[in-house]
Length: 227
Image (cartoon, rainbow, N blue to C red; front, top):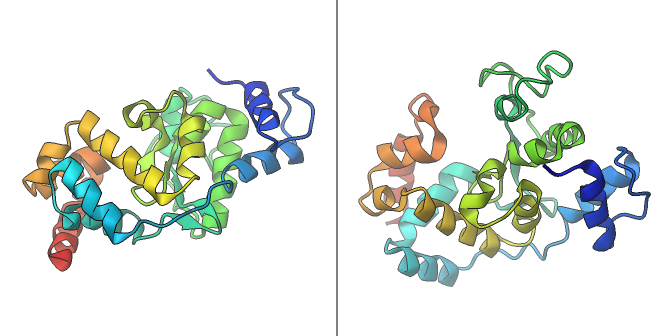
């Protein structure tokens, strides 16, 4: 488990934090985290990136573009930070419901209890509040970038910790693409993607609530639009 002091030390070692390594939350810690999430060149994917990724996976560029269109509407970054969506119900589960009573705005057991913040600024406020309470669960309870992969899936994407995953997702869209490739291979979802089984893919990628949000329908429609 990563302590706040350990995160501060990493931020200090990488020139993003000048405060004391004391495990106490403050403006410098918060600023250091935001610097970490704005460090990358934010380079966008090119058509060639999609072509090369499709070749590695054995699918078509349209398959990958469909996921991007549904998950992020094509955007990997917002104001130099990765596009995110914090999930309070995942934070609640990751912390054993420890903060449901004291912080009901950012920790509750049932998905959909409260509406998501409408803006990315509002969503980053939620993310920072989560990280302040629990570093690993905080970074792990948000989805990132062009493919909106949850930080809790960091190991499936090749990263040791949730904050290292978040740090990488802040680099550029190609890093986000590589995380997607690792994720669908390691979860077995590549087979569903290859055969265009959008129900199976959406169930595995978006969770059991996929049908309520019509993720399978949206993916199929997006795929057809790119063919």
